[in-house]
Image (tube, rainbow, N blue to C red):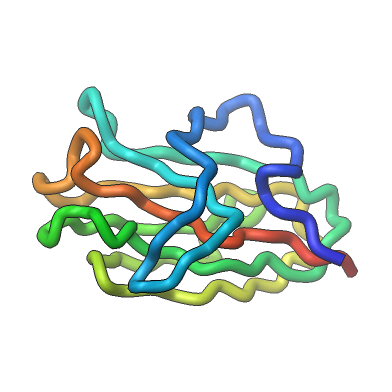
Length: 136
């Protein structure tokens, strides 16, 4: 059984998301997605979710939206109970499938960090497409 991240409880220190709409990453569409943009001097956005040690895998696809600036670079990171389990710097036109074991994990944190000058204030959108936790 699958639970999308938007249906999970989030942690109190989570940033607001910029949208939950269809993501377009490297020419493919992802219906269940969550996006981060970088405005007002903020170069990092993070969301924490409580898994309650009830899921086996965290799956999805990450990348910049197809309408992001060509020179934008975003680092996508996932932390499981505070430990880094995924990190990748990406540009528009790239997509990475995520499949992480989370069998005994209480919380996961998804972090998007803008690394370039290009891409601020709507110039880049970090997309977390079809992010979901799957039951044990």
